[in-house]
Length: 429
Image 1 (cartoon, one colour):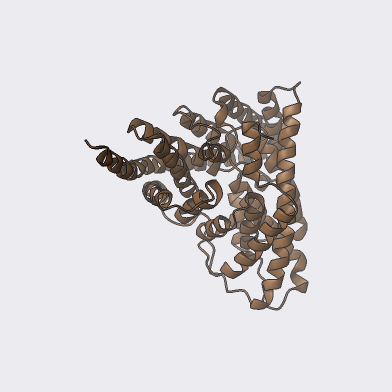
Image 2 (tube, rainbow, N blue to C red):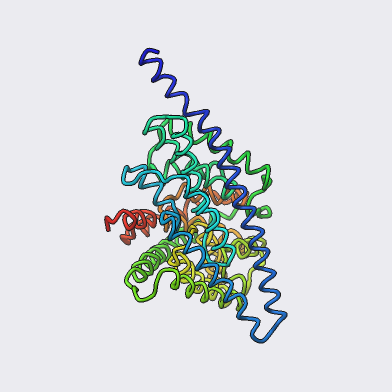
């Protein structure tokens, strides 16, 4: 076969490979989400049982969460790249700072993630799903004997498919690849991501359905008079996001220097702390989907309760990540943003114009703005939030707040969270 014909066939071969790999990502990612739901239901039953037992029954969730964190950390110790989010690994591969992981990572991520998140740690499902998607894409490229460039392309594109499956957010997956991972929009990259994401989400919907993750009742268009308030809210969120990044990196560095306690024992201690929080209130732990759902349904607790949720989850999220178990940052971050938005609304309501009595617009905007401040990918944050909630009425407030949050965090000198984690992973920091 002439060289030109081989090259042409190689260029086209990546698309069917991406489609098949996308189907596998949907199967694995959808199964992962299904298992997490069952694990969370079991943990909810455990909390109910411990409450009925009374007395020393409160020890039950403490022991279970500590054991779950320890087991998940032990799994990650056997396959070190399975710890944490995995998004920084995808970015490192794209930048040629690392090579794609092998297939062993998929069962480690799957099992470790279900155990860690099913035990109540404040971690997100998107990190493992993104990394599993990337590995499936790279393995598909290797097995079909594609070139090194196409293997990297599949690794990156199918990572976006993994994010899309995690939140049923296909456009969010595409934008994540272009804005966050590659910081580029190239025709071939977009096309491979599109076909991989389409088959992945289509397959996952056979198991999970197509409804938004956090459907919100119809939200009225906010008054134009509220835009200055959303601008100030976004700026304040940028400060919060910069603090969150600093705390996360600081806790990871602190754990690195605590050598007297082994990683698995340290994970057990962190798990015990989270278990105690869950005993006090189940909404203080976990990925935060139930808390977000409650707020977006309009069931907003008192300002003092919201402040408690904010402080505890602000610290407990990075602490859970420091346990070294498989799990991501997005889901707890979105929940924290919803709490922050509802709290700011509750505090500022007397100063807001008439017609701003509902906290839901601020909760939704808080989700996107805090994501933008921490990750520094505002367009992805906006689209992801819209797809998760199914709400398009808040696009102008979202644009305003995410602009202010991103600019503020950047002007404060805060390094985007996945840049920090990637530099830490590659030993460049």
